[in-house]
Image (tube, rainbow, N blue to C red; front, side, top):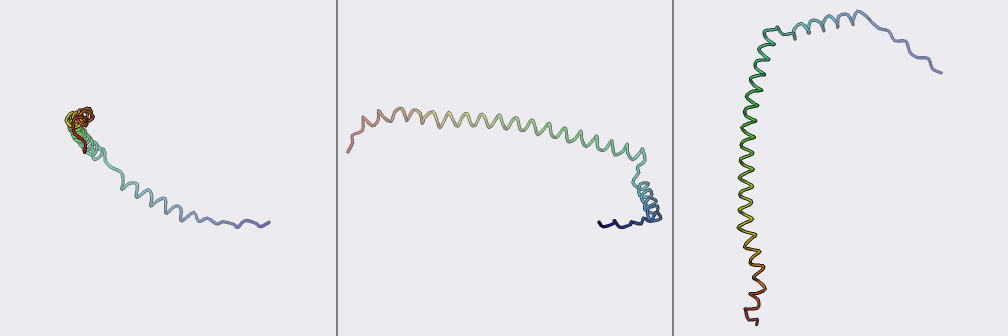
Length: 99
C-alpha cells in the first residue's frame, strides 16, 4: 500500500493574504450617510417603477376590454350572417333550377 505524500504549509503567505483581504474590506465599506443616500435613491426608484407599473396595468386592462369588444363585434358581424346563410342554403337550392 502506498504512503501519502507529506504536505508543507507556509504560514507567512497566509498572513499576508489576510492583511490584503482586510485592506480591501475597508475600501468597500460605506458610511452611514452614503448608505442612507443609496436607500433614498432606491426608494424613489421603486416608487417611480411602481407608478409606471400601475399605469401599464391600466392600459393593459383598457386594451383587453377593447379587444373583447372588437372580438364580440367581429363574431356578431361574421358568424351570425354565415349561420343565416347556412340555414337558407338548402331552401335556395330548391328554388334554383339545376342544369
